Length: 372
Ligand code: GLY
Image (tube, rainbow, N blue to C red; front, top):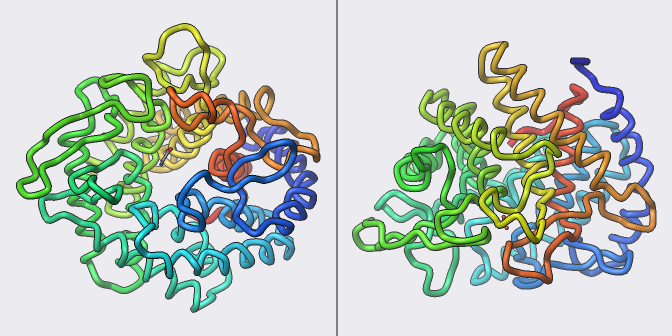
């Protein structure tokens, strides 16, 4: 296989051609873009500035800045980063996704520009995430009554904890991340290499109380985006810690994903959903592709080829079938799905799907990329 596929080069060029119009539309909004309706950006449905995806738009800008050196991306990333400061002041609405929100917005700013204010914002967010740790071995996901709830998505949030330990030379953050990751191996990862979405623990004792269905089809099913969170999250854990058990877990989930995805390489929302209706989730494909590209760098050459090949197929299927390349549509992907049973957010745009698509294309091309 070509190491720098031509289709990916063309995809990056087309992304860059679309972006000036997308950024102009974003500048007209008083929110950070999440989805699209009638050709215009729309905000997240709840939580205001604390909406969990609000780091992804600036993160896309940073990846494009890293890939092209174009200052317009830096300016737009900074504009969104400053809007995010209001979320710190709205602490009651923050949740475990502070990892997503600041690791790849302010964290990437610091990495690319050395901006000390961004560094402080990122360390502050890491402290907020560490503060959600339950000493029974898990990070609490959501607020309200969900005192013992942990979800697979948090495997990606752990990245900010590894980063904080590396930056501050204080192991507490990494140790919390590893305690959580070890709990996930024990209670989320099934024998067949698939991952639960939600596990509810007794917050006093850590005993497992329930494994309900989440955003996938049903309890015991295989929510494809959750598989992506697990496989990429464990690959990141392996890179930051060097621990073989995280690498092995990531590989098991990745192998299962490859076996389940189907010949079109466009993941169903749930790998155990009924044949009809056909519900796809582009986010799952883009996240899993980035996870596989990360994995490819951590394993031997033969396994690396397998994961890179699968990642390329996932991204190419999106580029050729599920991206709207027109300038009227400010996003990229068209078939992202929030949750299997929620018809209102089925086959829509989502800025986090777009983020992973951009990261994946840049990685395939060997461009400089910011790492989680
Ligand atoms: N982290 C929430 C989701 O994947 O929908």
